[in-house]
Image (cartoon, rainbow, N blue to C red; front, side):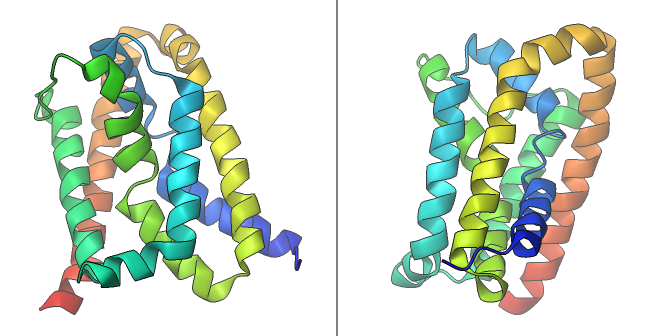
Amino acid sequence: MNFNLKEIFTAFMVLFAVIDIIGNIPIIIDLRKKAGHIQSEKASIIAGAIMIVFLFVGESILKLVGIDVHSFAVAGAFILLFIALEMILGITLYKQDEEFSLNATVFPLAFPLIAGPGSLTTLLSLKSEFSTENIIVALIINVIFIFIVLKTSVKIEKLIGQNGINITRKIFGVVLLAIAVKLFTSNIKFLL
């Protein structure tokens, strides 16, 4: 085992910025309203498991199905774009089905919102720079933080109120749109 606090902290901060659980609070609140209930523990564990599995087998899986990391990132940019448009314009692009309350915890919350293409491609980048055990520790710390935010999102909603949620939702929608554009432009050049 080669634990390094500097690597753990750096990997944690990079993943924290990419996952952006604080910025996703308006989406989480909105999903909670649509679905009625979100299982915080299940969403956190599933997102963490997806990221850890992808850390080990992600590149192999993408190669197996003939998809490179850049194509994966561009697809993720489109998903982020649609979520951002929902936030900014106040429209619903994701059609909820009758079993939405069962699915909201896994899709779209655990994947692709938390364990999305941005965080998954970031994991592949971190793997080339840091040792795997340090990345896993950073991931676990992020998952704990994600769980806390998911569990307290109702309290956060009460604290900032409906107007605060609407304003925050629009602001973070624009930020998410900018992240989608950046993810798209930085990866599309490799495909052309």
